[in-house]
Image 1 (cartoon, helix red, strand yellow):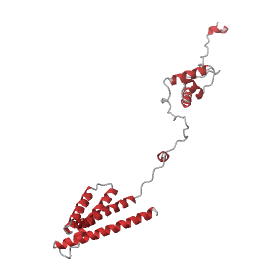
Image 2 (cartoon, helix red, strand yellow):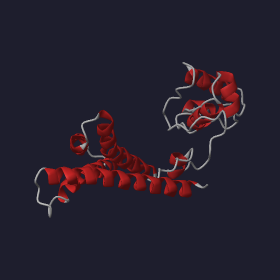
Image 3 (cartoon, helix red, strand yellow):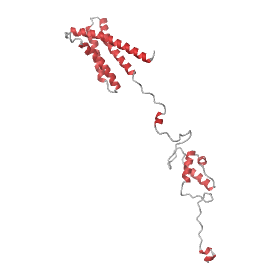
Image 4 (tube, helix red, strand yellow):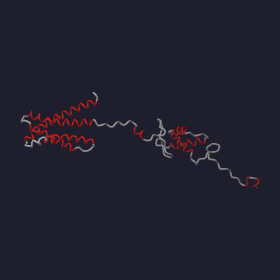
Length: 241
């Protein structure tokens, strides 16, 4: 049996039991109203007021739960009229414990079956679907180039590399100066290995040092600052003597 048919069958059973309990309680309360000299034309309203309030109060509890509102008052109303219905049914029963128990079962069954029906209605509410893993990340802008394992996110120019050891920038600078002075071409990977930092950090510092306008490459590529041209005086030439 599928879940839909199970729900329909159980809901039909609950409704049938609730209707039977209401009918039994209605008959006892109706007779009690007649014995209390309520006009016969209006006596049928008495059980409707008592048991009908129970049903309406419990349905209000369900509505409050769906609206995420407080349901204290509907619960109190349902409990009060449930106790009243049980008491009136017992009062109408013969003065024997078994008979009183028989008459008390009808209003109790009405309350329980109505509450059970409320639970079934609540179970039919659609549950929110589970969020797929990574859905939040896919919803936002994706990075232009996904990072590979071992890579570090790109840093803004001039920002320190928090994962780099202390003094790493000084060591990278010294390695850069040494390689330039030796006429070598520094690389980010080579500087990173020499200074013990990540390759990305070495490449970033290499680009920063290369773009530094305060350093001027020697025309011969030896890395030393270009020497100023020698100045001549009139005394260095025969014509000036």
